[in-house]
Every structure is written in C-alpha cells, then in structure tokens.
Image (cartoon, rainbow, N blue to C red):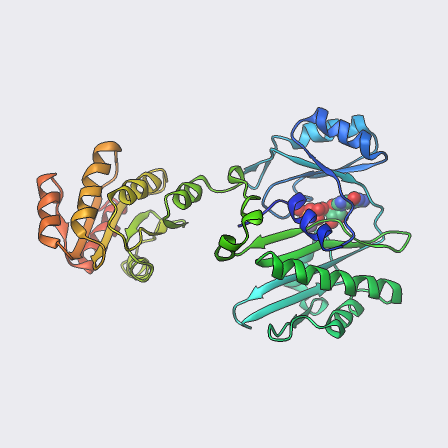
Length: 380
Ligand code: GDP
Ligand code: MN
C-alpha cells in the first residue's frame, strides 16, 4: 500500500526527522488560508501516488498567499500519470543549497533491507541510477543486528563533508530506518534530502510504501489508505477478499489457488496469449466470489476472452458452477467464456453448466488454447 507524501512526512516527523511541515488543501481557497497562516513563501505539491510530480508540473513555488491559491487552482484536478490530483500539500518553501537522495528498500535478492544513498539527489535520481550508478552507495543491513550507528555515519559521509551535516544526516538515516521498520515498510525514501544556505539538513519529500502483509498489525497505517488513489479494480478485489493483480493482456483468468493461477498464466503465454490479470478466488466454496471476480474481469475493456480454471479440492466445483450461472445472469458478458473444471463434484458441476448452456472442459491445455484463440478472434 502506498501513502501520500503528507502522511509519510507525518510519520517521519514523529521519529524526529526535520521536515518543514505544512497542511493539506482540497480547494484553492484553503490553500490560500494555509499559506497565509504559514507566512512567507510556500511550495504547493500535488498529492498523488506517483513520483516525478516535479517534472510533471505538480510542484510549484508561491511567494504570496494569492499566488498559492493560483498554483493550487492549477494543480488541483491536474492529471499526473493517469491520476487526478484531489489534494495539495502547502508547505513552507526552503532555499536549496544541495539535494541528496536517501532510501531504503526491502531487497528480496539480499534478503535484507538495503540502503541506497547519493549526493546527486533530486528529480533526476533515476537517470543517475541508469547512467552513473557509481554515484549511488548501497549498504545491506543485517536484520539480526539492525542498522548500526557506524553504518549510518559511513553512509552520511557519502553525502556531506561538513562534520555537522554528517552528524545530522547520520541521525536522520537512523530515524528513517526506525520509520521503515515500525511502519512495516517495503520502501522508505527522502528525495530530496536538502541542505539550506544556513547549513541545516532537511527532508523536503517523503515516500513510504507499506507491505500489505503488515497491515493487519498496523491499524493506524491501514487507516491512511486512500482508495481514490488506487486502481478501482484492485479496491473491489480487496474488499471482496480476492487476490487480484491487473496485467496488460486480453485473456481474463479466474483461478482458484495462487499456484494454479501462476501455472495458468504460464500456459496462456506458452500458447501465445497474454493474461489480462492474476486472480485467485481462493480455496473456499463461495459463489459470491465468482460473481465478484466476473464483475472485476468484465470491467476491464482489454479482456477479449475469459478463462475459468478450477481445481476442486477444498473448493467444490458445483459451487463455482453455480457462481458462474448466477453471475452470467446478473452481468451482461460480451466476451466468450471458457470453463475448465475438474475435481470435487465435477459431475454435478458439468450438469449445472450444461443445463445453463455452457460446455465445461476438463483438460487444462485444451481450455487455455481455446481461450487464447478466442481472445485473438480465431474460432475453434
Ligand atoms: P517529486 O518530483 O514527485 O519527487 O516531488 P518533490 O517533492 O521531490 O519535488 C520536486 C523538486 O521540487 C525537488 O527536487 C526540489 O528541487 C523542488 N522543491 C520541492 N520543494 C521545494 C522547496 O520547498 N523549495 C524549493 N526551492 N524547491 C522545492
Ligand atoms: Mn521527490
């Protein structure tokens, strides 16, 4: 789960990280009021779950409250990488002397949190990573010992030479590590970490991605979820307890079990097709899940054929069959459906489907080939 910059900044501020704190506005008038309250120049920042807002025109400086209103007017409603800006953060503007990058991710290859820091921070860090990787220092943290003070100090020396700034940065890195661990994050980053002309080290941006599997123990973080910033299909799927990931292909897959879902996607690719999604309806016998799954899949305009692949172990295939019949009555489905099911109560399931005018296959290869062909507009 991603959270907004203003929410991440509050979590970092709570750890003691120096962050110029502002307030969120949803209207230009509110933006003006906040700017007046803060006094002095402000920065108006789009709150959407993507990076690169600066380059997209979603970060603007304003010298007066009136200008803050104008800039907020321009940014609110703006489309940034497909997301509509509904909130802006109004924060005190800082004069920037240097911009650095500091970030920590959970790196599955190293099986550890890994730091990445660079004195060449700011809006072009992706380019630095691609063209000048030597400017980025990496350090893996052994989770048995945690992030040690001498490691924080070493990383800080890669950013600054002034001893005061090195000490300030080392402290910020330790606080950021605590924020990363305590909030169940898979990524925490500050870009830019700036120095101002007075020599202070400050966090001007913050990003925190939380591991979904940590949320059950972190209700305060779960409460930060902003469904308006998430993919609508993924919101519906989560609320229906389905595991769903949207992909770019045209074969909609409805499968029970994560392993079978992966195997189905592999087979779709093997036979020359592209899966439109990963969708696991789970191991339970619940027709409602099938209805919800079909609603999600048919909401994707790219889907040209729907493939059910059900192995009845704990799942009863007759329940799935009933779900398919119910759902196809409720929803006007305009694309062909291929059904493969085998296992528990298979004979009953085939009869239910046959009575409703469907044919059910039992062979997985055959079903996948048929769905791929139908998605391509070839009849089989
Ligand atoms: P991002 O592009 O989505 O990562 O948004 P950032 O919050 O990082 O802002 C992009 C850039 O805007 C930063 O790298 C800074 O150069 C600039 N910026 C952000 N806040 C301020 C500020 O308070 N003062 C000044 N002068 N520049 C700022
Ligand atoms: Mn940034």
